[in-house]
Length: 79
Image 1 (cartoon, rainbow, N blue to C red):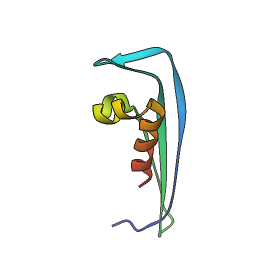
Image 2 (cartoon, one colour):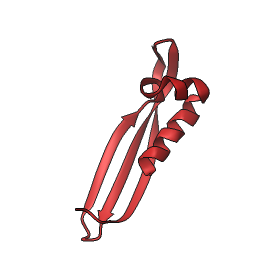
Image 3 (cartoon, one colour):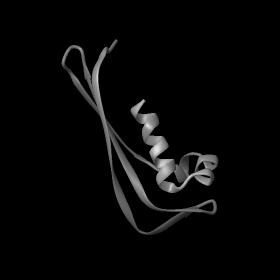
Image 4 (cartoon, rainbow, N blue to C red):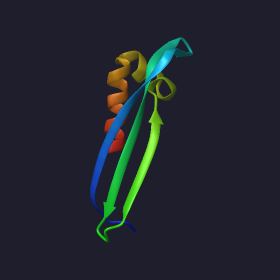
């Protein structure tokens, strides 16, 4: 069992050379998220991932801007 003492979350944006389309939707950037956890024992763990609301949830993609959808995804990672 890991007891989380602290965490940090951040991201960076990667612009795409040209818009990328999938099932009628298009994006022009990817968000790379990073989360670092520190346990009560002092051990650190880092997780990294590339997120894209275009691939994840068509309802969220159609209801929010690309930035808004990615921000929601980052909030889930932070949670």
